[in-house]
Amino acid sequence: MERKNAWKSYSKTDVKKLEDLCDGYKDYLFKGKTEREGTKYIVEKAKEAGYISLEDAIAKKKKLKAGDKIYAVCMGKTVALFNIGKKNLEEGMNILGAHLDSPRLDVKQNPLYETKDLAYLDTHYYGGIKKYQWVTLPLAIHGVVAKTDGTTVDIVIGEDDNDPVFCVTDILIHLAQEQMVKKANVAVEGESLDLLIGSKPLKIKNNDADKKNKKDLVKQQVLEILKDKYNIEEEDFMSAELEIVPAGKPRDMGLDKSMIIAYGQDDKVCAYTSLIAQLNVKNPEKTSCTLLVDKEEIGSVGATGMQSKFFENSVAEILELAGYTGNLSLRRCLQNSSMLSSDVSAGYDPLYANCFEAKNAAFLGKGMVFNKFTGSRGKSGSNDANAEYIGRLRGILEKNKVYYQTAELGKVDVGGGGTIAYILSLYGMEVIDCGVAVLNMHAPWEVTSKADIFETERGYEAFLKEA
Image (cartoon, rainbow, N blue to C red; front, side, top):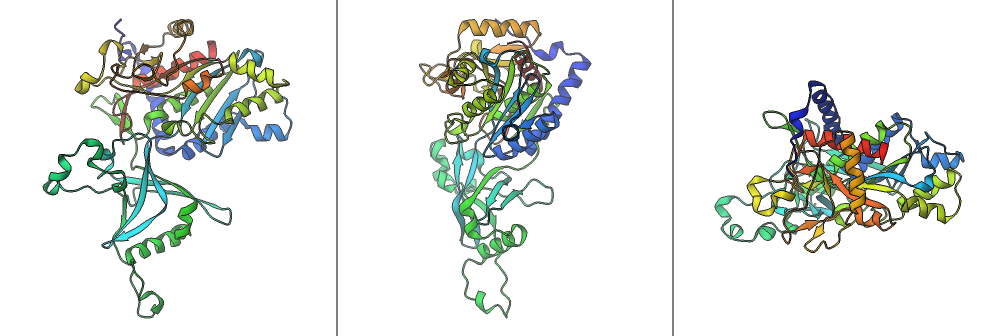
């Protein structure tokens, strides 16, 4: 079953809509490199579209009705949007679920040290990465520092043209004989992914008697800068969440500008298209919901991950405000819901064709991708969608002339992966993985097709309207 390339069908009007969508997406990618920044961006867009916070709705004892729009946030890292539909909530919702976190380097709690007149931040990598890909790149620091007085300092260093950037160093090829014979997974060790942040010693004035015997003057210079610019002390690192990400803006890629290269497209490409679909759908029949979560890259754990009770609790609050009582209404709502687990798929790369089975691979430019199941080898850890649900979705997409394809995550026994799909399926709802094909997945710079982004947003919108 050969799927057609979407580019061949586009009119000038279609291309204009595609470029407008992708311009907005690139803006989001740059402004939302972390889950905190992404949540802030999403909430701002939701407010502009008339959404009010669940906290305010509860405080005002607002009686929810069709057409009301609510957002809920968990710890600044996870957000759920609800557009209340005309149908009884016990009949379920149409849900889009994506994640906001991406592989990166996290700064440790006691990170700052000096050795041989060079100052570093000690890091711990987050998510599945090829460690050797993170050396010698210009890197930026994003995050927050929570101080003991209750204030929080936002940090972004390395994105403005006048900012410095940072990097993880690597050994020169002339001295790399030992490194070059190592397996790729140990060529660069995790404890070697420390960030070089300074090399200039603090200058001691003659009257600074208390500083004359100080050691680690490069480290002290760094601390002076942090104190001067951000009012941060060294001990404040203990209550900081600082993420190291590639510095720089998303860019169009290819002479034809048909692709986007950027950090964090897994899974921000599905988060953004889900957001736009949610905001574009007016007066839905069934309540539409977009759920954008944290911690997917490390197993959806913790208070802000999909395994927490945040989503379930938010739905319970929505039901209460809409006049439903009791646990049974919550169970019926969740069980009768339909979901697209909006996550990326491995794009077919001809340079690594031996990793794919081409008949069941996702190709750039051929539309949104459905993965009936994910997991690895014998479908381990996978949600496996029902045939009836897939048939219903096919009908919706074909009615709306959305380009789509189906795929698996590489050859059987080669590898695999997982998403949040299996967690939502535990409620008994219909769930399938559906998203955008990505090249260089989990690398510092990932690649997507603009056509796939466009078709995925169209597909998500059709789903929210008609599923």
